[in-house]
Length: 575
Image 1 (cartoon, helix red, strand yellow):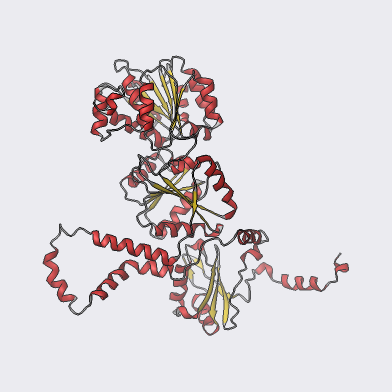
Image 2 (spheres, helix red, strand yellow; image 1 turned 90 degrees about the horizontal axis):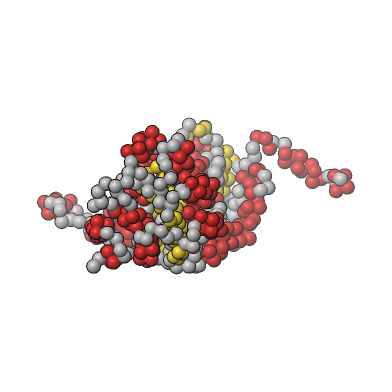
């Protein structure tokens, strides 16, 4: 007997899950399905994402539905359109051998007229987001009077998103419901309140401890100065060449900005956020699912319901404001029993959040050092060698070309061939990382000094300090920085290409968001200024001049004289 059949499911459903390759129920399925098949028991299921919750409630619903009745009998409410579509897709696969059973997704961002038309044809299961569901109720397009089963999926997230009143309204007006099933990853007070107010002695099943994270996830964090967050992200992505992951930001503006910056530098990435139309969101998710893009950058709301197999990494570009959201973010990886890594980029002042999350999820975080440029190059090199050795040469007529290849390379040693292959693959990495900085935050006190200096005014904040005391160098100011798409290596390449100077003439480079300072051999300074000053870069007029120990804005002229005069005034006169 099939394990799912032993749980009490009918033959058609067992056949479907067997054909899908499911042989053994997950723990939440094993506990929930026998209880829910009664149809009259309220239920609370606490389990992490990726543990098979959709099948845990979806299979019993499909088993209980009366296909002869063409009206909504079951209502599934979930927080986002992505999750809504994911649930519908799973139910469609589960019911493929059940005739006469209809499932309809109802969500914002799609034509409400088309959704109303489908509902009026007669459906038994409605999967809806709260906002669009209320819209349908107000238009009298859906009748809650005959709904028997109400499922709240990702209940904690719906409450975090402000849908408490909508959920209360639905639960109060499904007067004929025989049972309410609530599924959640965490159990905050608001979820407990729903259980208390709208459920009758619910059976509660918890997989692991409440609010705990998936034990198959390795939680890592890297501490870096706040201004190095983006460079740290790039370095971690480069250090994990086989990464297939989701990057989380707090806002949609951050998601779009980081995605655009990474795309400009050649990464396969797209953003998923609330400003995209449903068609655009579907296109992005389609490309991510078929692995046309390596990385997806998303906000918390947009990423709900992303159930994609094989995600290896989740990266928190910024920690969420609500630490409970961390559980949902990390749950995008290590699904269906697989392992995964959840990386957090933070600065030292956020370390208290790490401690709080550790306590909440009952799991330990591992602090790791941000890899050096050499570490990244080495990792990429070994990844390339592995790909080279695994390359499939069985399907091509490569033997035909061997004589020509042997003639071409007759006077070239094996070592030289390997070097040339490596050069073709790694020249960009080597150029990028040859002068890379150490991105690790040194000490908490240093971090505090950096933030303290940043608050002392624009003129103090923009003036760099140079460690080099060599009088053989001039310090030059240039009005280009990271805002123009530069990172240190690309900026270095730009100024050298434009000035036709060698790298040996350069000293320290301090690149900021809007501008940069460059130490140049005094004998080469005038040539660099002449080469760059007055040129245009991406439509911007480039200005370069000698900094004289620190750049003075035009508005600062005269300020140093006044400051010096004040210093000469005795203290009593100043008062």
